[in-house]
Image (cartoon, rainbow, N blue to C red; front, side):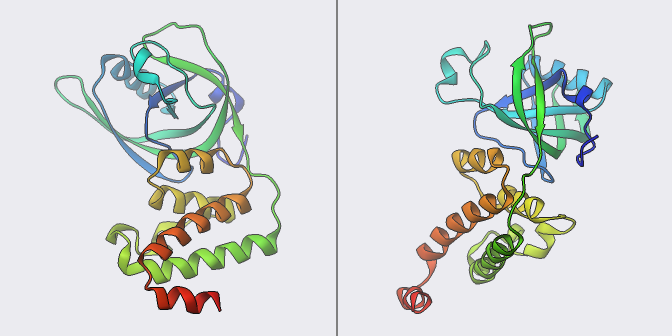
Length: 223
């Protein structure tokens, strides 16, 4: 069994909820409102079983085949349903906790209205501890400087990263809290090198910093 607690059998036939602009990172909480009939069926199936499901991004151009099986990105997030409310009309409000990132190996032949896939969990690779620590320090410094300009819910970096063990988990918590751009989020989700995830986040946060910092402050940082 992997560090996430997932076994190979958990990923042998997992329902995936395809969405155009949503990425589920390990360690993150994701609330979802489920109203389409096929995804209501998915949630009922999940709640009756292991309470595990995935969230995968639809590739651009999905609108032409939205009611069918449009292409999806090959790396997705796997999570557990930790809270659910079924409404009288059959809609659901659920909350997922991200457990792992995974690669799609194949889509299984259709048996139900929703889609099922065979997945392989992606674990973090080796990273240089010194370089990783340097990127973490960079992110912490940028976060402190940007605090007044960030949404109130994400200003407290310690609260966001509480319980995150290791650089990879630290990066995932930051990505889930701050990265709103779906393409950037997908790139970070697909990256198994924790150091590279931290670098990508620092690069994005630096752009934010440069857009809000006064020119004098930017010049002093370059000297």
